Image 1: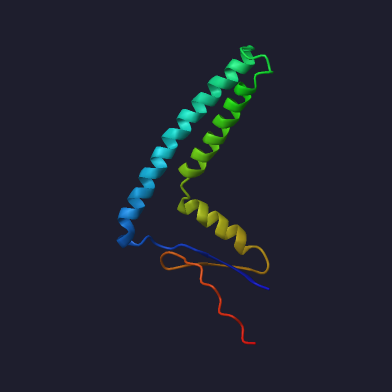
Image 2: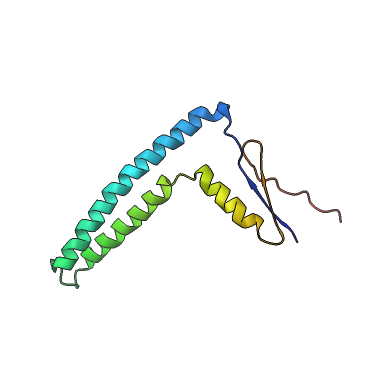
Length: 117
């Protein structure tokens, strides 16, 4: 069995508006991440100072919610760079049974045809 990983190539200029929307969405997510991180630091600081006795379930829920929102914003704020792709491609290409290639533009998964009966 051979594995094939296909990575995106160049950006399609026809998708410039979509790329702009994605960049804006990432910037918004980055701002949300900063807000949630600050909120979490404040909550954890209150906990460290002893402003909370350990039995307050609402406080625990508030911390868990802040962590979840921070994680969600971090995932939406990620921008995969060309350098990241290059490093992953290099690492994968060094594994036996793994083939790596770059599509001319955007890579799309194609469902293989059903084998003949």
